[in-house]
Length: 70
Image 1: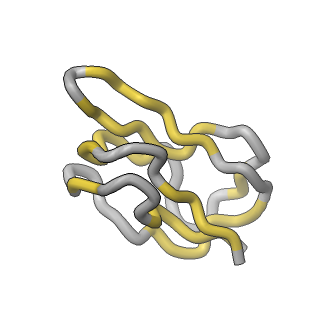
Image 2: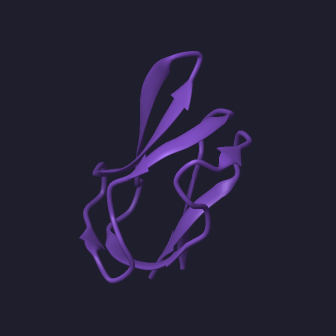
């Protein structure tokens, strides 16, 4: 099982996938908002979204798990 983590602290502004979606390596799966900038978060592996750990609007720290892939 692979995990997609945030690369910086910020608010989870938007999720671009839902449970059951197929994702490809390099695909943007979420967008963080930090200091009025939108930062896309991409997955490093291909797979299926198994679980979404954080919700839109949640504050996340650097390296915090956003979602899990299988």
